[in-house]
Image (tube, rainbow, N blue to C red; front, side):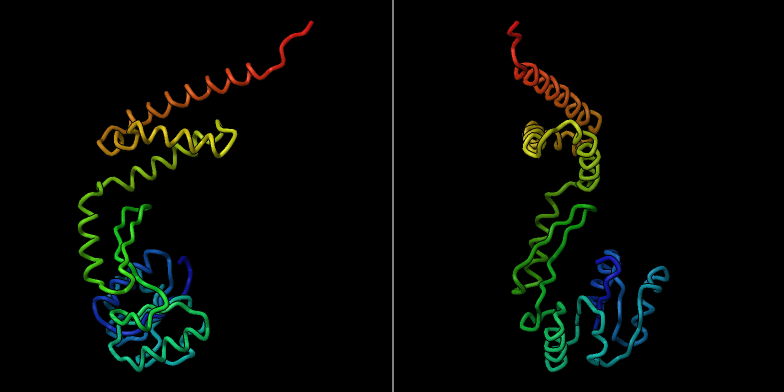
Length: 218
């Protein structure tokens, strides 16, 4: 979404919430809404928001990648959908799935981890309920763990000669509970598990390399 233009049509807290999520993702917002809606966004977000008008016109879709509407008017949303479809632009209309070409899922965010729950547009309240159930099961430091794993993966990658080797290495460590150790508050212990496993991997690869050498026939 970085630097992509998104058109928001409507008003209310749901428009504000979705606009904030788009801004967090790096999008630029075009806003068709009462002027007072613009002031609801924090000052630091203002440069990424352009207020256009209070009435939708097809020209407002120029250079737009996604349209989000919270407007209750079926004729308006139908017009938006038809014009957006003609231009190949994604549309999400709140509580009117018949006009949607894109579903907005309920999301659990532990940056850089994101879990999305969708009911196919059949019930936003239901997807929100499911999100709450799943969110209770996910640790608060899940994002920290993902960043740690990314660093470990980058450090260890040069020691593998193939994707299969690397995948097998991490799958084994996962089964041994390396991520659980990190999430339980022992990052040093988790890193030691990685280091020990890597030393074992290097020893095995060295032995295999020696065994593959041709025997001395002299």
